Image 1: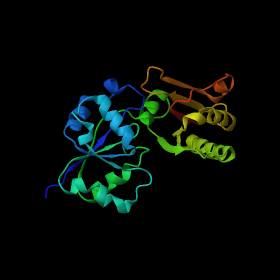
Image 2: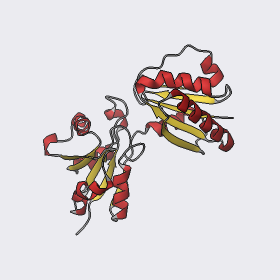
Image 3: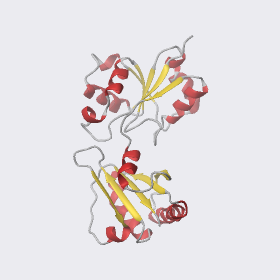
Image 4: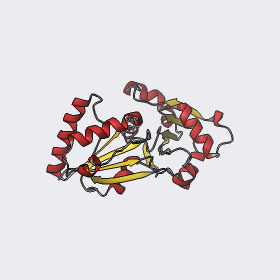
Amino acid sequence: MKLGTLYLIPNVIAEATQQSVIPNQVIEVLKSLRFFLAEDVRTARRYFSSLKIFDSIERLHFTVLDKETAVSDLSLIMKPLLEGYDLGIVSESGCPGVADPGAIAVRFAHQHMIKVVPLVGPSSILLALMSSGLNGQQFAFHGYLPIEAKEASVKIKELEKESSMKNQTQIFIETPFRNNSLLTNLIKSLKPSTILCIAMDLTSPQEQIVSKSVREWANESIQLAKVNTVFLFLGN
């Protein structure tokens, strides 16, 4: 039996931006799909409804794929592919498989000789790196820093040392309501000469991207908005 194709479907990273950031290629592929894996089914349904390309969202089949999904569950949730149907993975935000649980499904597809097709869409990590002015040849994404301030400070200093040694841009994200506490910790923990970039609400009309030294950040009174934010720094 012919196997289906696994499509990696990008989502918006800022509300109401689908008309400007989702390419036509994604729209055309979506029109042909009926089976989907989604981190949050409600969010996926709302996203697809906003695209206005399906006669009925109720005719689509969604299965949850999130951080709680076990590898042992994959044979069942990937069954449409094994039966010859194409399947799409939809990220909660941005691109599937990047800071996203979709990676385990992609790995399953490769292990079973299923074709994987990544579709172009917004990635906050790459957009932030592109616009930071920091080193785009050597970089690493670290996800979230420890929640506890002292642990986070130790990690920040460790990453700064690695950044200086390797000329490597360090990239991480934070829960929006903790943006300000993280910025405070970064300013206290990093060397004054380290370059820190903050990229906020990317692709939205309120997008802000600012790169400057920690010394310059420390001389300002700053209150970050509670929006999705990417933090990057480069030691020297």
